[in-house]
Image (cartoon, rainbow, N blue to C red; front, side, top):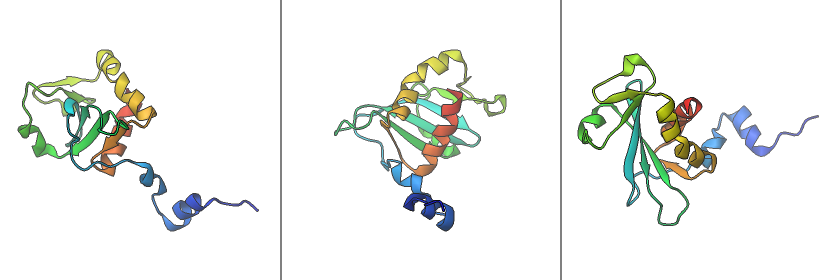
Length: 133
């Protein structure tokens, strides 16, 4: 008879999202971080901010935003990346090879767990973007 570990039992039998405990949450933008890139996924946006945390454990912060957030950000400070032509808006660019190269550092930070999020949804959205990078 197979012996299930405790985390798997909690996930499979109780429906607990045990992997969510491994997602680092930072509710507000860390001090000294700057907006680098914005991805538009449907009606939502995820912003990627770069810096170095005070304790040195992460270099990127990812934040999920609703549609109205875009009006609050300066047009000169943002670069909006979209994956579908239907998501194109003023000031956006379609994901291509050049942007894939620019996102290599973000992908590396995700692999090394040097990224934190404002909420769990932001992590799942960035995972969707990761597959395209």
